Length: 109
Image (cartoon, rainbow, N blue to C red):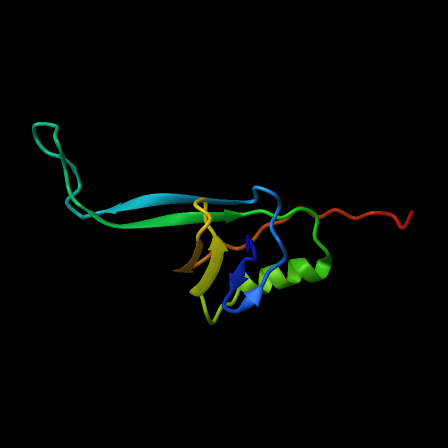
């Protein structure tokens, strides 16, 4: 199975095992809510989602590659291809929050 994550044609380092999650979210119409008699009203206009990716320990070069893929100020929207929870390859047009990371350094020995 191809588990590569590709952002606008750039292949990122492999994610951690079980390091990808996708949460679908309904986008409701402007009139959504409850009516005066407390019944639900409104329409689902679209289903969007949140994709979360985590990696195990990376080299500095791999961190730079990931940051550059998700932090292009002149191009806030991009295409990302990944394997979803059904085993299907998906390509989404999306935007990203800025990536965060922990910094670990080690002695030569």
